[in-house]
Every structure is written in structure tokens, then in C-alpha cells.
Amino acid sequence: MDELEELKEWLRIDGEEDDNMIQSLQLSSKLLIKQFTGAKREDVEGNSEALELYKLVQRLIVTDLYENRAGSNKMSPVLISLCTQLGAYKLQGGTV
Image (cartoon, rainbow, N blue to C red; front, side, top):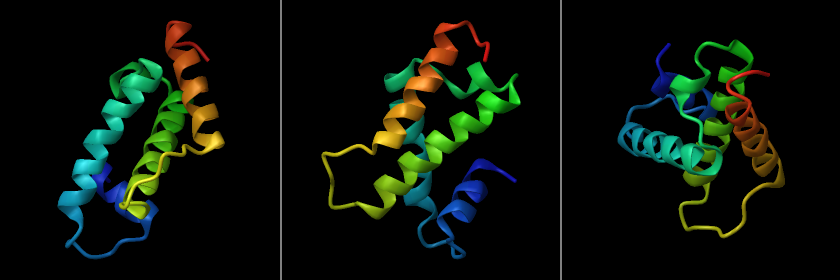
């Protein structure tokens, strides 16, 4: 399953009408994760646990952006914690 399909499954979206928006949010989430943590998907692909953490952070970001299209200045404390953990993984040289 590709990244778009995984995100659509997470968001419980069956149709294709929002695919372009979801792809845009997916790209934005990658940039946000890199800015928050310094980690890119390639940095975690060799570690299944870190990859799942990355994907969870990405899903939460995409969900927040998708559901709050009007905008919100608040970031979930859970998301902040997960980003911190992913950033710590990156700082430790890719070890959990």
C-alpha cells in the first residue's frame, strides 16, 4: 500500500475527490516533520519502530490539517511529544 492509500485509510476516506488535497498535506507534513525534528523518512526507513513513529506523526499532522482547514494555532501535546521523540531518534544517530 502506498503512502496516499495509507493516509486515506487512516482518514477513512474511500473516494478520490480529496486525493490532491491529501497529497498536498502529505508533502507539507514531510516538511513540517523535517522542520520539527530534523528527521526525513529516509532517516528512519531502516528501523521499523522509528518508521512507524514517523508515520504516526505524519498521520496526526495530516489529520489535523485536513480536519481543521480553517486553521488553528494550537498543536496537540501528544503530537509535540511524538515529534520530540522522533527528533531524539535523529539526534542519536538513528538508534532507538
